[in-house]
Length: 231
Image (cartoon, helix red, strand yellow):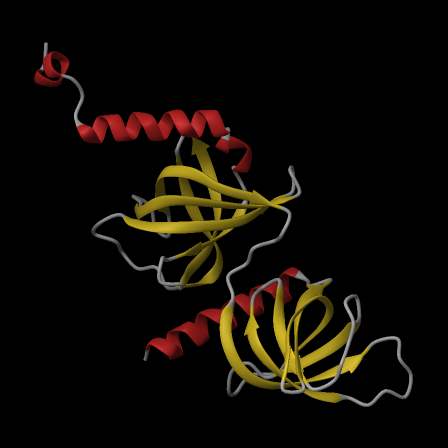
């Protein structure tokens, strides 16, 4: 009989068994195949990936886009996974550690644990201070208005303008996110009014009817903005 058999299990063994027990209890395998955003504790988005081969509290992360800030890891890194489960129609947030896998562009996720399920789609948001334009939809003879984009995610943006609007209003939004690229043109809808002060209104907007190509472009732009911010 080994030493741990005589005197009990090591802290690492107990931690792994507890993690596996929680994973079985939470039934995390229903999230296998889900696309997730992988973010660090300091608010950076490392990559967007598919959660594959999920067994217990372990899985693989296979990049779903070309953009990535994740490099070879000598030691496991604690990260947050944000995704949306079409089976449950809920946003899903998980924690895990990530380390380099044996294959190219494959990352090993370990000690997966469920943190939160919610009805609100939680996407990584990149802070910005960019000028843009809004054209209200369904309103004839309404002039285009100037606005500021305060943050952006693949799901939406926070927009500031001096004109009052209502929840549910829809717009065509133009904004040039990075120099030397074409402006994005997306349809968005106001879902919340965040703040009103000094004659300025801040609106939380979600993007409507984005194609996969448009989502991919926004993700690539977010990665580029993060790289520029780190220079």
